[in-house]
Image (cartoon, rainbow, N blue to C red; front, side, top):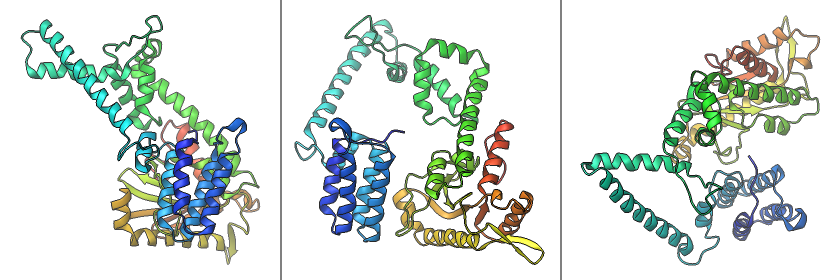
Length: 410
């Protein structure tokens, strides 16, 4: 997803700076402005660096205890990354107000409603002329079908100024959308994908001819996932990769963690002072926290020899302790998090990703994994995995044509 950088965001950030009390917070917001203004030919600069700077400003505000600024900056991030629509963002922060509410937007909605009702009256009269015996329910069914097909309105090139609503497109799209959502096929926006495919007669005929198109769609998705796993494995095996590198590679790929998860939470800071690396949402709505540590660049070792067995080294225990602290904070703020964000944390768990068997070339990989599994069996609500084991599990699932983790812990 591209990062949005425009006048609306710039003006809202100006409001954020105006309410910031601490000099450190204002300086952090100024760094965002400086980056935005560094684009070529007067264009506002975008990219992941803009997101990183806004996240840094949010963290600075949190450290200063300016929680109202934290909330404003979180909205800035949500807008920049497309989670808040521009019209809603403008209204929320009164960006271009010409009255108590933006009158231009109000007048546009009013004129649209007026035109819609005029069309409905004319279309209703025409329908009743052609169907003089139609009752109220039959007439409403007609308008329901019209409304569904309106989502596929087209502007034919050969008829400038005219628009066409193709009949039956809604039914095709509904079938496609259900198909795209079925069997855990991971498509970011099934409704949009369905609309795009429904607009192509060739694509529809190809899909319809292939047992509802599921084999074609699944093959394409499995290929995409295999490519993502290959790219992620390259980052994991890079001895210079930092935790931030690993986080960027993992974000947006929640399927790697298993079929129990339906997505990632939009907010990473749910408890004051704590920001989790990857917040996953399970199918039952509960939160699962993923804590990321280094992979091949981890120092000191992942495991150590104790008596006659390999056991997790100190860094593993420290990472688990950090994850436990996150869970304690989530438990203490459970009611507020549920009310504000709609996320259930009572049944929250955590996964610590740390290290790689390649750190110990003299120790068989199965012994490294067994040491962590033995440790996991004695820990409640927290599990520890190496990056390699996570990716191997996901790869085996892809090879079998299943979602990674479906029917297993990870």
